Image 1 (cartoon, rainbow, N blue to C red):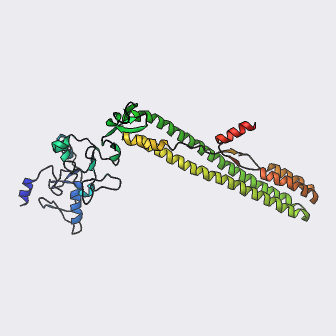
Image 2: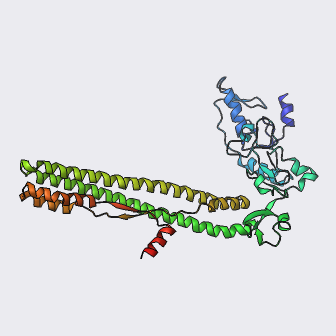
Image 3: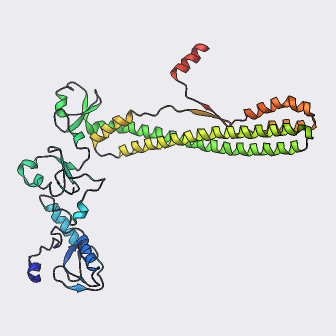
Length: 388
């Protein structure tokens, strides 16, 4: 019985899935199978024991043979696929055909959706390997235009004329079909979608460059501010230690003044660092938005679908780079002036301390890391112009 099956067996077709071989392997008895099919079959046998058999001739093997792709047989099957008038049958394992979330689903499959391999611009359907067969064999369907399976199928069709969108109207800045040229877009400047994309890619490159330049600028500013904060904190600590040393030499009458100066330094340090950290947080948010925007433009640059490229370009173009605040940075600010004032107080009495406290407080407040400068609006510029 097995011999009869062997004689009727197509050497280029797997006897397990009954489909043309995919990733063919030859097992020790000489029979050929799809790698996924025979692996799955032997995976089930491994649960029963240590013997593995050929589904055709029932010859057994132990241990489990190591499967290697038969490259010569794979080449023969590939040549058969190319020489066939229609694509050779679907891949062997149905599990490999099921549509994943990132795949385009077949519109014809009624139950478990299979992965679509082609989309028909006439039928407006996406079809799996099985359901696309009539488009290769039925004369009435052979004239239909098939493209790679696309999620954007409806966007390729003109909603007014139900024709393929393949023209770009530069006058109205929108994608249209050939009939639109003779209708509402008559007399407008029109080009093919491919030609318009070529022009738009130039703008896209310039926009990507702007994003990269802004990112580099902001990264440099972030690094500079971080270095300034570190220097500022070191200077604040040195000032605090210096004030401690000076005030410890004071008499009991200046003890209260010592505490006031210490608190002034710490309060100013905390406020200034907090302001800098707030700016850094804004910079991080802006950098994230810039990178996200750049990624969207980068992704668009790789889009192969002209129509979807142009439609997406219009959407992204509407979100141009907005002006952002710049900052005035004082990276070398320190408490040296304060330290000198405190040293002068060493030989002074309590009355002199009272007179200098106003001066000390002002010096502490002036030691800032950065001063945010919001971008000026058109109204601000006009106001400044007439003020002068």
